[in-house]
Length: 141
Image 1 (cartoon, one colour):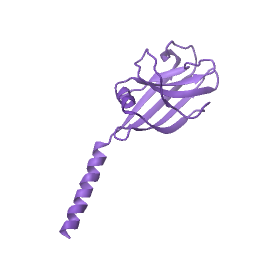
Image 2 (cartoon, helix red, strand yellow):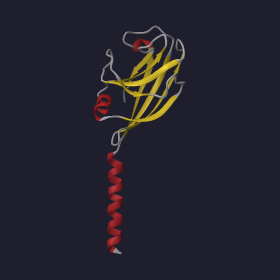
Image 3 (cartoon, helix red, strand yellow):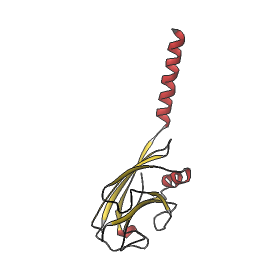
Image 4 (cartoon, one colour):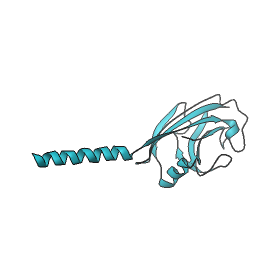
């Protein structure tokens, strides 16, 4: 009986440690044409929320947008650039021609997570008229 209690105690401690070491961090961005590089004149606007489990590097996301020049052609998280710079696609958000809101899950690589934590990731939504992106926002905690 004593041995069973010890094992249960150790399992509880291990579970508590695992839970304590995993942190979910929320990152948000307001999306607008003025944040694109170069800036885009558009009445379009939006918001993005990305929740990251720093232990597993799993992300869940929700991106909402309205007022674009036309239907969204694509949306992405780009990593590797501070505000004012451009970077390649890190995470495609939803399928082609996504409708608002776009929701889903993905997994980041170690370099992508490091860029996110350093403020070097952004979300943008692309349209046919603005293939490089119509609205954009830098992700911040």
